[in-house]
Length: 389
Image (cartoon, rainbow, N blue to C red; front, side, top):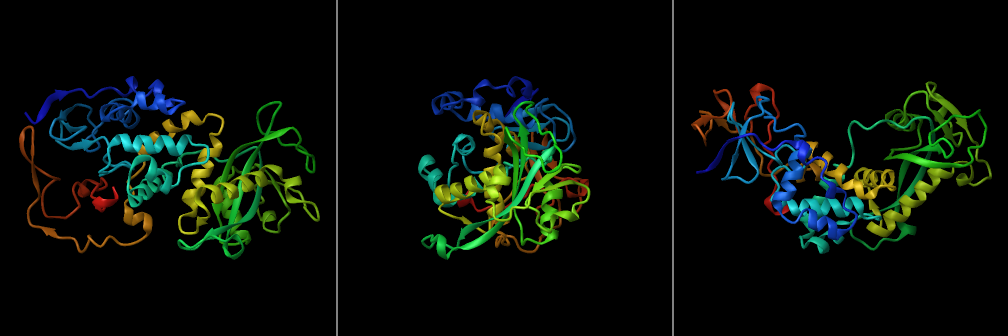
């Protein structure tokens, strides 16, 4: 029998609180996820915390297929859905254990993992390891994250970047302009508390941070960064740059540096810049301009979770299970050579299901890769090279 019968897929509540997802050591993590089945159980709970829901019709009853690993067929519409379909792991050729190991290493390692290191750790080719790290970095940003608020230090810095695979020389490297914002937390009350203008913020610590590359030091670039990452009405501690007075819907508290070192009046944002530069040089031997924002997002993710690093794996996995798929060609910014003009289908495709042959989609002529498109649902027909999965 090619399917296991009509069943209620396991409820997510039984696995969402998996205690070993927060394993503090490699030994604990290996014991918690020794095989594909244990990984699939946790991934099911992250994707469907309240139980399976068909992405086509919204029903919650399905049959678990035996012919396809971790794939369910909806009892209502016949739609077959894998636990990785439509996620960052869409159409992956890698085992789930490799994804879990990579996510654990990248999220819990204090300095991060480069593709070259991951290649050695997991026994992958460099191209596969590089694509894996790029997809995981894109899963480290929560689209619904809250903006910074309270009191925020804002400043800009230049960092060197590499060109190609040549030997990295800081003196001859180019420069990338980075904007940074850091919440200033009062240690006594453990929250950001604005003070009178010009007052010193003593006995504080850094909270959440945001980093992004900006084109230049113009008011347009700086204002766009601040508005995208800082809540309106927040107190901004800056170095008095001419671009900040345009932010009239913020409380601006400038600290003109003059001959004083910048890290004296804006200590936390400069400490973040210093750590970021050392991290880029130490782990990656110099960052590159093309994918700079994904590397900055990785640094921000790790810094914001530095006090509970063991729980970062759960966050990465949860975001990965809900992120839309990104192909190799999307990441490198080139057109997929395997995709040409759409082929007009004279008749809809049909496939074998538990109840017999079933027609894909609502019927009528379709173009290749447009299944269910007339219902307004996104197609999942991403074509990635098998050698890079």
